[in-house]
Length: 350
Ligand code: NAD
Ligand code: TYD
Image (cartoon, rainbow, N blue to C red; front, side, top):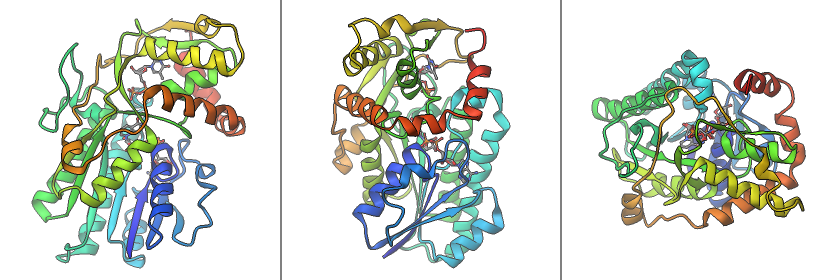
């Protein structure tokens, strides 16, 4: 029996992690601690919300008293920490919010763990879920390994880098049993349509322009979100305390090639003439400080924990598109209201 807080469980990746743990580990009690910001959505968890080993806890990781009380009352022995502000473009408009949630929020959780666990750390675990963006940008060649020096460029990646440093510092200074993973770009169902792939799926459905920053030659490594959730399961259960694991899809794409592929898949799905959706592609003003290329060396997790991605990009993208086409109501709900204001501000003049 374990008593686990999963923070950010109503968000994109968090909801997949919660679902996996609730279904696969009936003897664990899962507390989903989420503030329900614009990115959090309980619709994402309708299928498991009635499970006896699941409980939603509405709250803010910045609220010290609330977090400490939760640790004590629920006798929490493990944390899987995903709650964050996660969108680079929003971090450029509002860096302070990222400092608060991503750095101060993480330290608040670490403090609560330290207070509650005291010197009895034996079976405890604090798992911090992070991003490859902390390593900065690569040129045309090379891969990020666990030894690559941190070199973040956006307020988002700087805040995640800082939180990673705090997690390691709490391990080295106070003996908190931590483990960290740094993953590449995820895609899949329940992804908020401010990120490239769901934004393009939404716009293709509505015949709206597909905004490509700069020349579209920026490169990302993409991983299907359910494969990330499985990696998180492996790192949580088998990862070596104090260690870091890079997680990636072995799957690099330039943005323009990815969007072309998505357009072609959706031509077929929507019964449109081949080439119809590509006409929606529009090159727009570049993101400031845009990192050229991210690419992950995921050989450590493969060798030590036996993890590898299970689907190809084409399979994963097709599953993703099918989910969005079957769940139009989900997209309509999340794109009403504040999303319209965000979209107008982000893409004005494009
Ligand atoms: P998301 O933006 O979809 O979800 C974040 C969740 O955190 C939301 O449910 C939100 O309500 C919650 N949250 C935000 N502030 C909170 C607070 N103060 N208290 C409690 N809950 C709060 O994010 P995501 O894309 O699912 O990413 C999850 C984690 O994985 C993040 O830590 C992110 O840095 C990391 N990550 C994401 C990716 C990616 O491609 N999306 C890749 C690697 C790592
Ligand atoms: P994004 O999904 O925001 O993830 P991240 O910035 O964390 O990698 O963006 C992925 C890539 O797509 C990145 O190079 C920026 C680019 N991009 C666009 O070209 N247009 C867009 O409208 C968005 C949101 C992203």
